[in-house]
Structure formats: structure tokens, C-alpha cells
Image (cartoon, one colour):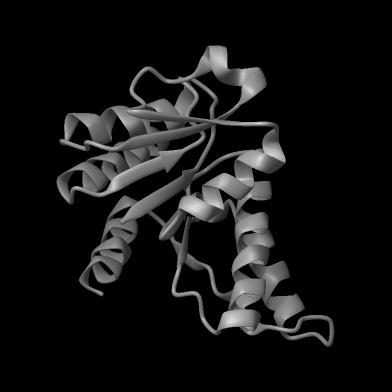
Length: 185
């Protein structure tokens, strides 16, 4: 299974955040899945990749825009260069079986929304894509976005209730529990 991770590239984040990235990476490695991520040697991206590698992950795919290739994480076993950030998002979505949104900034939210939009269209065209999005809503960080998606899903403007289909979890244990449920399928 390819686990795509969207997250912050910022350094010096609090331990309660880095521990979530570490738990996720460890789960990916222990379950012999592939990590697919933004591929930059920074922040939660690198922490997740390091934990995955330490737990035995053999396939770490970094998808990096060409203008950031000098920042590519040496932990990547495969480096995919993208033309720009939009191309990177497309490649990340293409690779993913399950998507995990960790705490992050505007780029992380953009990746979440782009993935959700893609999966909604895929669901309309093909039926349910079966590719879940799990969002780590640490301390309510993504409450406003999730509520907005619910509001749109209930409005006349949405074609699909899938807009509100992201699975919100609050901590690393809930994240691992959700991943274990998906892993059983």
C-alpha cells in the first residue's frame, strides 16, 4: 500500500507533533508499506521518512519539484521530479492508496483540498474510489476546514457528499487505529 503523507516542512516543531510523524513512519515501515511524500529533507517530512526507514521501510518515494531537488531527502529510495507544485500534487495523488494529512500550513491544506477534489471527481465518474483521507486534527487545527466541507456537502453547490468524507483523528493512536482498519481491507 502506498501511504501518501502531507505535512509541514518546518523544523523545531513541538514533541507532540513530531511524535505523530514518528508513529506514522514507524507504522508504515513495520507494515512494509511504501511512504510517498514531498521528498524534502526537512520538518515532519524528514521525521516521517526517518521513522519509516528505521522501522524497515524499503520504498520511500519523494516527489519533489525540480526547483527543490537540491533539498531532496537522502532517505528517498526513489526520487520523482515534478515540474512545479501542481505537477507534484498530481503525482502524489496518482501514487496514493491512502492519504494522511498531518499538521501543516497552507501547502498541506492545498494538498488535502486537491486530493479531496480529485477523489470526488473520481467518485462521481467511477463510484467510490476507496482511497481514504485521514486528517490528524491535532488540538482542533483543521476544525474550520472540516466544518466548511460539511457545510458545502449540505448545500446546493456540492455534487457529492464525498467532500465531507475525510476521516478526522485527534492523535497518533487514533491515526494508527484507522490505518489498522484500512490495512485489514
